[in-house]
Image (cartoon, rainbow, N blue to C red; front, side):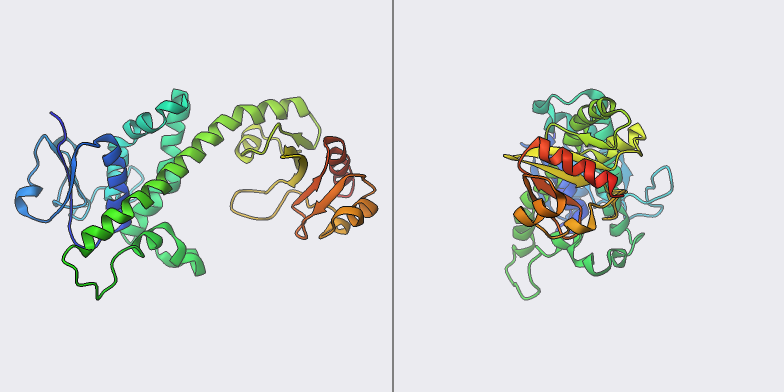
Length: 308
């Protein structure tokens, strides 16, 4: 039976059903998305998917609510929101549809599914259920994805009878952009990994990793246990860059900083201090330097290693 209706609740919206709608509208583009609390629409049927409303979680009946008691939990006891439930049941199909043109290997699709669930879906689930306080983000709490999507709701004195629905459908393509960008980046990291692992092997015991272009490399370094590597060089446009390697994606701290004497210098000043012809720039925070050739950037990298 073809899915003809995607049904979620009317009124104000939250990130969980909005993001669920992104997944479902890609998989069932011909289905009508109906926002309602009318009982006849909340009765399960083979041609409907009901989510974030309905008071039940029954995948066989295609109803995915999480507000009832007992509420659905992950295997580790953490709560699902409707987004987590929809992703658990439709995430693989969504990735298959979205990544089809990118020729992503099956193993990578599975890894992307898990990574997206852990890094993107789970935080939405926890915030929606009150299992994690927005305050954990500190001053950035107003800039979390649920807060930003919530800011697209109509203002309190918008008296239009269609204000909530209008805002929801205007927010839907915005939410879609966030999901698609996140998944594209996960796919890019998967593509980069084999390239980085090959470069690590080629570098051997050297503390300098040379890559053919800028790309995600940190997860490959951790996978290869290449703890001896301190700096990364790669071409960028007509220049070459020298980058420090972060300890993790959650910090700005690096395995090693560029020399303090280079901080904030550029052009002839940097050439004079470093002794490298072609040196062009070093950031004041000492995490990146730029030179006009591969030869110059490799000299800078060797000097940076010696200065540690």
